[in-house]
Length: 353
Image (cartoon, rainbow, N blue to C red; front, side, top):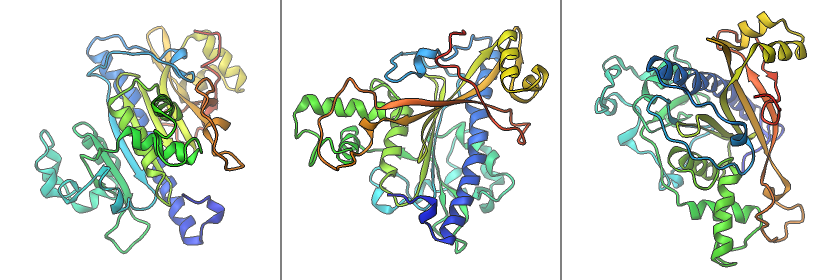
């Protein structure tokens, strides 16, 4: 189990600070790739973009959408420390998929390997984020972690590509249910029906409906698996079906998505934040024909039903109770304005369309 900052040594605090700087930098770039760049892909190909509906952001929402080739998808795993070798049976990373020039040359449509140099994979390299973006176009999962080779212990690196998650859903559900004290030994100890409920609740715990598949399942399974480490971790998942970028971390779950604002909404939001409409448009919004485009983050927290009981006693699972609740929404500034802070914008439960 990871430690809170106040329980870390000075050197561990330094490591976490560097990790958080890295995570923030990666998150900003991934938000653009997943959302803004995807929207541009739709426009360039003359295809209507399907915006996320408010109902899809509420707990237990279920809506199936058709995936689109124009939405940028990815899975990025980040670890404050080093992923232990004991997890290699479930997070597939080996010498064959380490980020080395001899391995990159086998990737189709990846000419960058000819100009690849060892330092490019390190966070302190000027081309690090561009390198990640190039690999996202052709790869399944990327692993960023503390470099296990170099003596400089606080150096982070993109160590592996083609990372796959291979942990059974039932095992992940059992791991979570034991921690939450719904079971004592195994997933099926209270019967098949409760086992199915607990597997469904695993998805709800991570902000998804149990019917989802693909990268979203891999991402939430990875997030659950990495809880076994003694350091914090973060998983970013971009889903074409949901048009959402998910982030799983020690802070909980967040969903990033695009919203549309009309002139009336822009004026109202600007007034509520003591901004001018022009400043809001310049710093936060992208003009698109007859509306404005913004990047919103919905943050979620776990309810008492998805936290370990204070008395530590076994308890009965109650399917009707939500395991997740919406706790906050912020509109993020554009990448061109790093000095601007996100602003609160209650959108999910608002009456405006």
